[in-house]
Length: 400
Image (cartoon, rainbow, N blue to C red; front, side, top):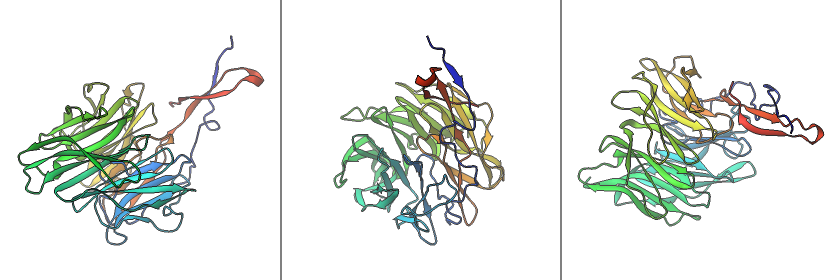
């Protein structure tokens, strides 16, 4: 029997190791203090060839949702066709939008405008993205807020959003799904009730649990985090996932059938982690600092990383992160920034590899959108010791 030889070669055989060149700003002056907000929604994706795409909001000039891409791990940025500037996704200023990407690198966008919900597909071809026509998801009748989007591998796109009657007499959380060409959206209520409601009381985040849509939402009507899962014909009765988060101050990702949640508890001010595998786990404290805010959660399919805005002083925050490996979180936070600027709204992909593309907003004029690529995800390569017939196997994450 061959003896397995595991060889660590840190600088040569790390998969997808990125350039050490300094990352450039995505936008040096977005003029929007919430350019990469809010935490529950994804604003950044990485394509199969490693291109980074960031969607963010702008004010004053080129107002609305804008898109940029980088083919060199953030060292430079272009519009989505490779030219100067940014690409207009929508000219209005919704400041509430969510994106996801499919296996063919197409990008899907759900956004709120004038309390209606809309959708666009950004079609990928030869390294560029073209912006498709606007499709109406929910218009008139209800006031709608805070859309979140995901896509099943078979092509069905799901959007969840809070809704309420104009007079507030009825409201809750709604979902809608459609397939290409996305002209007809089927509505499925997740939860609804009569009383006194506003559309901004329900803040959803959609993910796929294995292959099923799964929603975690901040229910500000009852001051609880809750979750529900689509069973193929209806949504399950929502269950409590945690306490009330700050406005959209939570983040969700999934590793196959396990859903992970981090949230900023509005009562204690602490940042907590929980996971769902048929039921919700007990709570783990990630940060016991009351003023730490805006968690963002990502995974490589095995480990987790949580990024936060760590409080320094009034209007001063640094971006820091912890890693969870083998079921255990780092004891201490590691720093991305140390400048004590107003660093807010970390944006990470739902899932990534090789390194973690990270964007955030500096909350002082002119509100630049920053980028970082310093957190790498190197790997262990295993050699089977078989001489000419042997082979390398890219098998495990490499934990330094």
